[in-house]
Amino acid sequence: AVKKSLAFQEYSDKHPHKKGTVGYCGRPSGPCWYISIQDNSSNHGPGSQQKENPHEADANFGRIVEGLDDVVPRIHSTPQMSWLDQKNQIKIKTMTILVPGPDDAFIEWKP
Image 1 (cartoon, rainbow, N blue to C red):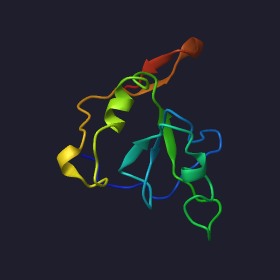
Image 2 (cartoon, rainbow, N blue to C red):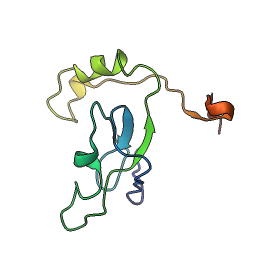
Image 3 (cartoon, helix red, strand yellow):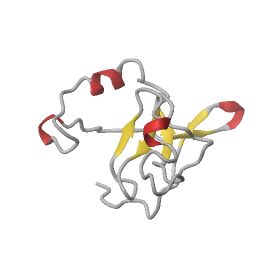
């Protein structure tokens, strides 16, 4: 399991926190992350985290391309007392990372 955070917040206005996007949470960012189930730009975009620093924002690193209408709502409906509630944590066993490929298609990322 990844247990390190990012060295700094890396936000780009080219990747706003719209519904279906995936972002890092915490200060500094990661390793925890979240799926936005609505437009979260006002909660996680520039100026939302620190009033002293209007430029700081959560890093947004991807988007859901499959399962947004069926899997994500089931995850969101699971009762949680807090983000540390291990009793009801949902563990993702497999995940495929897709990157832009030829002809606007996505291809599997292979490091």
